[in-house]
Length: 139
Image 1 (tube, rainbow, N blue to C red):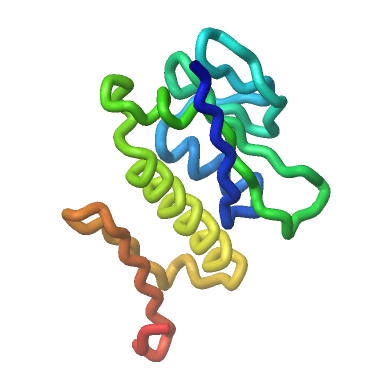
Image 2: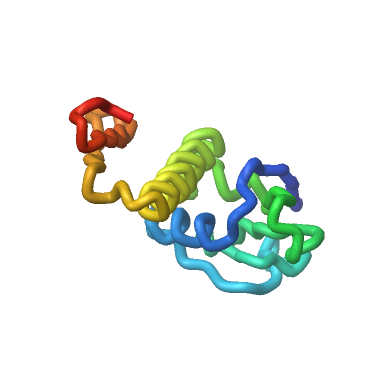
């Protein structure tokens, strides 16, 4: 039985989303989203292979850069204990963290501050970005 669910995300930048997914080791393409029993659902801008099922990221108006992505998939099957994807909250939390890091790194680079930036991953998985300006004061 299919448990297709659609969630609205706060992510708007396709390139940053794709880079975040790559950082998480995800394989993705463009195409229809696989659900329970091999059923195929809506076409997604980004279709992530989650094993036997897919997560599909899409925008209703792909030309609208401010419109947030939505994600659809059989959340029950994808995030059940036996599939090894962790909980939905853990997976989307990691995706949001990676997406934010990608966006922040790009903003830092655009401002020419990359050489003043240090990045450190803590034991609990949080990431610290520290920017020090030439006068030695943190930004």
